[in-house]
Length: 261
Image (tube, rainbow, N blue to C red; front, top):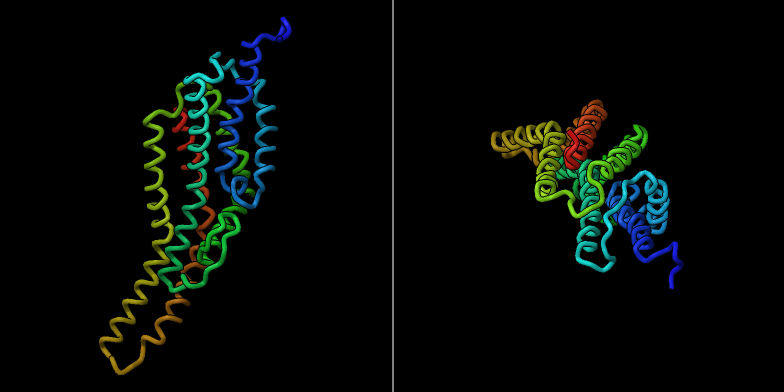
């Protein structure tokens, strides 16, 4: 039997007041870059989610009063997970953009065979992609991008309060179309280096056709590699402006996904 001042409805509301924000925050923490990777153990991510939930709950409006094992409770739980994963995916696309660009450049310049294990994701990627990933992570932390991401995410509790309504069909389609933005932006980022290496390869092809007796093909690989490295060195000057632009677009997309004008 529960005491008179602690009824079953009050206990259910208290649990819902903490449990549903925890689902949204924990799903966001499990997906976002740096914190959501294998570099950070799951226990630490869960501990950070619990700590953030304790700090956020007093500022939240009252949650809907539904039964714990009803269909509405399941729908609300799934909506919180979808919101957290969706916002985290939008932020992850920012990092994977540069990884894809590095893979495009490495494959075009013949550096695709130089691979290494990515400790964050546990997969094998070209060295250039890993170099871009490390550079983006350092810029992201140096520019306090993680603080901006948490600020935009916590604003979702005000714009998208806990309830039966979440991102909706338009939000899910917007997340699906975000994949095309990721590949298009990666192509634009890698296009100068890819074009420079392509021009060198075309030049060697013309020379090979003009003078077949000259073994130009053996020189094409190292020279193409050198031109690719030179193009990467030149593109590093504009790396920070590109990162700042794509970061602003990502945070703006996260705000639009929540319906913030």
